[in-house]
Image (tube, rainbow, N blue to C red; front, side):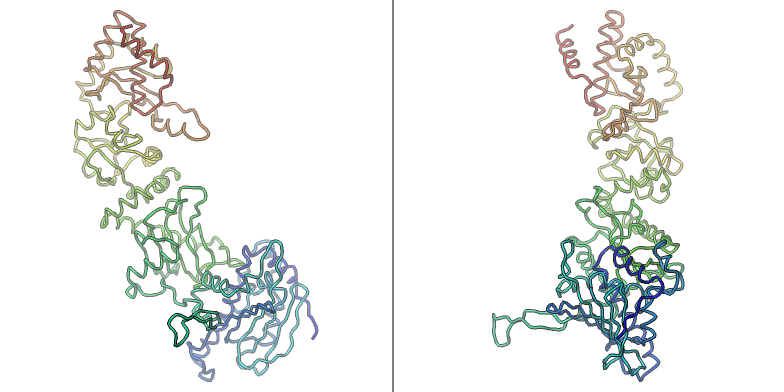
Length: 628
């Protein structure tokens, strides 16, 4: 038996495949099982027109066996087998052309199939095996052949004995090293787990003899260990079954087992699509957020299958960040895979699938919102923050896609409302969609700034999440209605006469307000009378684009940007405190400045800010109490 060298750069390519192309060594079993399945497929399709083969679909299978003593793992199929020339061409040359392109591009040229009998994936066996022996007999041939190799040093081919057509691959598993344990590939239950993970939906049975415990015949409590042939794979994936064959219980059970959740999903989506992109998808919206969902450790993505074989555990490109809560899988035969079948080329098909899934998810969420409102409310309470971030982080590019999914608490009732529902309730004379921001609904509901809005019967959106106001700034408007903060310096609610009256009063008291402004310095940009206040003596409003709530959010971040909003101190002209201020203007201007600071600090506290100088504020209150 003479040894042959691998052809044309194959030696270098084999070294690269063993050491760098595959991310996980365990992938080797997926590759060998996929090749065995392809070989069976070829013979099965031939049997449809050639009755002399004598095998029906139920006769085909893949067998796996483990010999711990001799450290061998064997994969056997009764597929089409290979001739000597096919062994030479398929296993003696690791790529028929473009070998250097593998190193540069890490992908196959278009004329080479990677999912077929003994594509390049076969050589992943050398990641775990010190020697590989392939014995095969091709359909229509009377002679079997044995191919043997210990890796980069070359291979040999000789005639062999094999009674039936098909292929047997024997892997001589490496010894353990300090860095890697190879013993696990000789453990039947580890093999079972790998088959379940990567090859569960290969359409032919994968069998292995395994030890099992069973009740000893003729006894009631004695058990014995027996060896039985066991099917390791499910074969028919649930997503390839007709929807009318499946129940809610089937989907829920699959979800819980596949994605390790003890609760049923809030919603499932079973999608079958043909045309520009052909794929099956099974998507789930969880009932609760994973413990690490809002952390850096959370990894989004859908499981990706190609013809029932797991290619990627989490394909992030199939989900946008704002739908990262979705769990599920996609199975497609149309994807362009790279050499290792672990990664995808970013081709048109992948983008089409991702775009279609995005629409599917949105439409199903809207249906839940319409038909199962309580369930949608629970969903939005759990995952709504991510959708709001989707609007903010895209600088408004996703407005059309996501705005209908948004919900907010409002001044009209306890249950959250969509923007569309808010607009449908707007009064005829109402120009804007009004909102107020704060740490809680109860806190916002007590803000002085919304008194006038509520008095006029105008509904107010209550923004309680840090991202809310930033998201609305990106939305800018909804159904041609602009958003306006209740803390805006101009709510545009006054009549012409009311505006003239307040302007007149401000002019009459401009010197008083100038002294108050002087006492407050740069803390405020203006002091003036207010039309929005009813019972409260004072409030702060915004004079610029950055609101007080945005100031708090931005300054709470690690880099502390020291952002300052333009604050305006507004005084209620109808409140007794204004009369006290006018009196002080004539009697004690320094005391007027102290009152200005007290009122400003009170307004800060109402807004949820911390007191800038608690000691000074406390002393001023004490002075006020003793009449100083």
